[in-house]
Length: 142
Image (cartoon, rainbow, N blue to C red):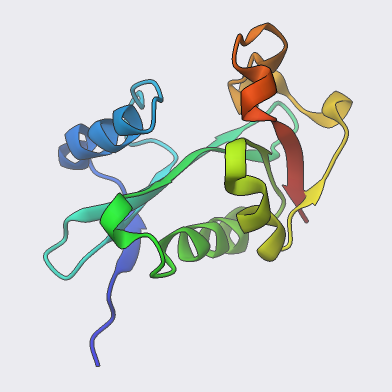
């Protein structure tokens, strides 16, 4: 049986689709393929992506991870996180909304806000008008 998807580095030609997925989730444009890995189907079409940003200490933050709606439930997000963890080791992120359960299933645990490099995480949760609805939780996977 053929694999449903594979993971590879993002390419310039992937960026318009990546940006459309990010936009659909209410996120900003992704500045380029650097640090981005994509899950692609058999036709080499992007079905999900994960972008990593390192802080000054070399710790990688997931920002963001997105799976195209029709591909949710097929292990795309899990595979992207496992790929990132295997490549860089410790991962950090800020879970939002209902995603905390997903991250906990993957082994992420809550960490203190003071351990978050907000620049690498690209977050300004303190000044966000949606903070209460979003319920941000800083998490790490060692």
